[in-house]
Each structure stands twice: as structure tokens, then as C-alpha cells.
Length: 133
Image 1: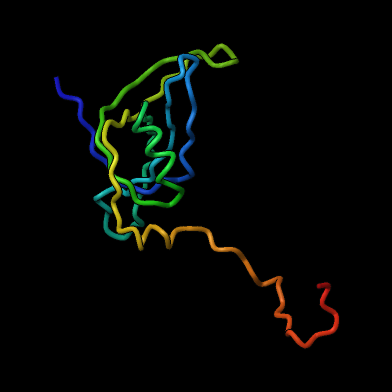
Image 2 (image 1 turned 90 degrees about the horizontal axis):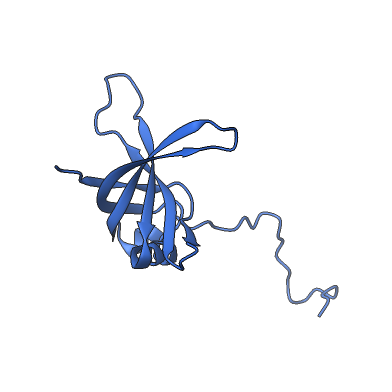
């Protein structure tokens, strides 16, 4: 049998690190992956894929990755079933990532950081007598 997944995409939100009752780290995140084929005249389509990492890989992802970063990973596809609060049976398909890689240079990664909006601030000159300090 063969179950291998290799993906590269951007994080849709900051990774969420949790700890199980037995003190094992688990990190959950979603990856936006563009499809490689776009029919003529149509816009590119994107799939949003749920990813789970465990233990040291989970801690690595939560520490070094953030929303918007390009990430590459290797792992396997897994499905699981559960019953929701309304009593309905649900099936979840997710990638269990074993290896995670930076997929863009550090300089590019920093450009995805949120920059503060400074439009509400005004410049104060040092000769103003209304300064509170």
C-alpha cells in the first residue's frame, strides 16, 4: 500500500498548538493550495486542506510559521469519523504531516507580516509647547 502526500501552499491562519491529556503536542492548521491546472478562461482554483502535526514537528510549526507563509510538507492522508453534538456522523479527511519545510526565503517570509496602520497618527514637532512630557 502507498499513502504519501506532498503539498506546498500558504497557511490560511496562524497554526494552533494544543496539548493532549497525555501531554503530547499537536498542531492544527489549514493550507491553501492552488490547483496546477486551470481551464482556459477561468480563474485559478484553490483547495483548503486541513493538516495535523505531532510532537516536535507540531512545536516547530507553531514556533516558526505564521499566517500567509509558504510551507511545503510531506505526510499521509487520513480519514476519521466522529459524532457531532447534534448526533450526526461526520467524516474528516486530513493530512498528517511528518516533515515540514520552509518554502520561501526568510526575506520574503517577513514581507507577509502584518504592518500597522499609521494613518491615524500625526507627526509632532519638537518645538510644540503642547507636548505632555
